[in-house]
Length: 170
Image (tube, rainbow, N blue to C red):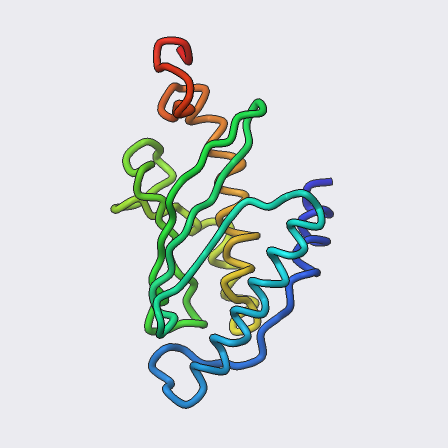
């Protein structure tokens, strides 16, 4: 069931056509335009399905992205900053999403709060590069990671809702 809903959601995200990274000065603006269009479509689709869960913005050249993501657990919204840089080998290499405030709170994370996407997402990205873009990174990389890790971190007391005192959460 989860696989089918994931497939349906991802099928709504436009695939990208331009095979260009930040070093390709001639084609990078076209790729960046496709990325924005895909992200906009993804956010619109999420809002339509009452599943709005992230905001992203980039620096002017589209190589550094920051934003917020949130996860609803037991009717409480947990919000986190996120950030990533576009690798020089993009789109052949997926960006490494970091959630800095969770750094060191789970084993499924690397230095600087970068989430572990090695086993499940990176092979999928490799099979679909350069058609996958940042909207796919969010939907197939960050979203499943949050769905697994955040409830676990909450149950262990590593993440506490900002409106709940720590003693009450334990």
